[in-house]
Amino acid sequence: EVQLVESGGGLVQPGGSLRLSCAPSGFTVSSNYMSWVRQAPGKGLEWVSLIYSGGSTYYADSVKGRFTISRDNSKNTLYLQMKSLRAEDTAVYYCARSRGLIAAAYFDYWGQGMLVTVSS
Amino acid sequence: QSVLTQPPSVSGAPGQRVTISCTGSSSNIGAGYDVHWYQQLPGTAPKLLMYGNSNRPSGVPDRISGSKSGTSASLAITGLQAEDEADYYCQSYDSSLSGVVFGGGTKLTVL
Image 1 (cartoon, rainbow over the protein chains, first blue to last red):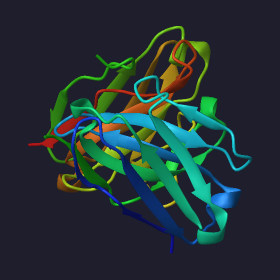
Image 2 (cartoon, chains in turn orange, yellow):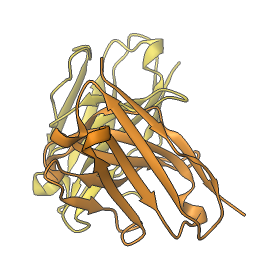
Image 3 (tube, rainbow over the protein chains, first blue to last red):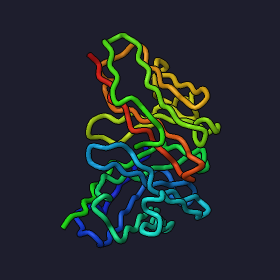
């Protein structure tokens, strides 16, 4: 059975940093495309970032230059390093397996989500 | 303001048919990019409901269907059931933004 287990969420001050992790079971991050999607409280879904199996990365304009998606194949873990956090980054963050290149991408398996709160 | 526009809410009685629209533009749906749909039950992660405009993943009942025409797409649910009450999101790609985009979401209420 496929599962994605996320960790690393929590409370952080504006301007601070946080690293999210996502460890899937049932498939390897190295051979799949992976994404992060977030959802602000009471709001809709917002795509954040995507990484191809070959290592190419893509970001939403709202996080470009501040967030970095990466993976550790030896640990079968996906990461999202977040810096210069703002109040508007407060959201539940989901990792998801992506299918297809970015122009045709969709997300077939999702983690349970973890809350990131940016507040002083 | 979402790039893809969905009605905030739709409703229907059990057994009825409802449709949820997703309206885009020439830089996303109208450019030929596929539309995908997700269902999100309260307090849970989204679940893939439809991919590639009209393809159902394994386990999604055939009373749920998707279509696309021009700059819009639609999700149709027939034989409405109480368990269908959820938020629904469409998703595509936008060439102007060079990124994945979601609709604002539609809350389906089963009366």
